[in-house]
Image 1: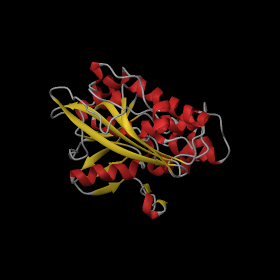
Image 2: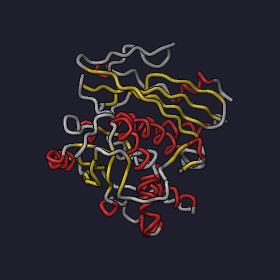
Image 3: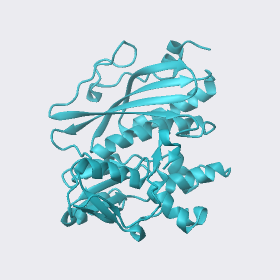
Image 4: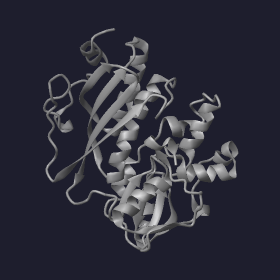
Length: 317
């Protein structure tokens, strides 16, 4: 197996970023040196993607690379932050050149389109796992958080729900057409970065839907000390989800399936129209799915206690 330094030099050392990237010193030293812009706060998040837990280990390498970064960038989107930099820690079982080249290509392609500079990381031998730390900037005082939801706010979600779970179901059935809309939503999710930035100043609270709508809604409610009522029939289901899973399972996927990486926001009802107008310019819809209530708990849906993905409780609970 090649040394980790050879692998880093060959696949994970991009051209030196320009001054506009805010990287006085990037890959190749003990630390990177970064220069946030004046008037900005730094938003930082880390996610670990493990083969056959977060993604199929036999998925195309370029897809795995893209997805590892996408799911981390989704956290910046939920804060309304603009991505700037990332670090990657990669554990590999082998140094197969073709696989690494494809993996790096997928990772770098999203770096480029999202404006994210890879500034460091680590490569080691082990079972396939990718840890990605993302760093972004948000104007002081404008970051979205989980803790601001207020009674009588509207709950709304970007895009559609259930596609991640639907795509996983198709993969498990043997579907390998990466152009299938549901499979694409599972394997190549789109972090809603522009949407998060557009919702600054409108949303009281926000979170990305990674573990399932109900699970992530509960994080907002707990942080805000409020409850919610959901409208089941208002949930925007991904196209083709009913056909793949059936009616009941499609709604369960929308509520509990996870891997959608849409944004769930709480905002005043009178600002819903403005929020929709801003997102329409991105070709993205914003659907009202319920309201925030002063009384704690969630009403309007009944799934026998199911909440969403939890790693140490055997998955969906």
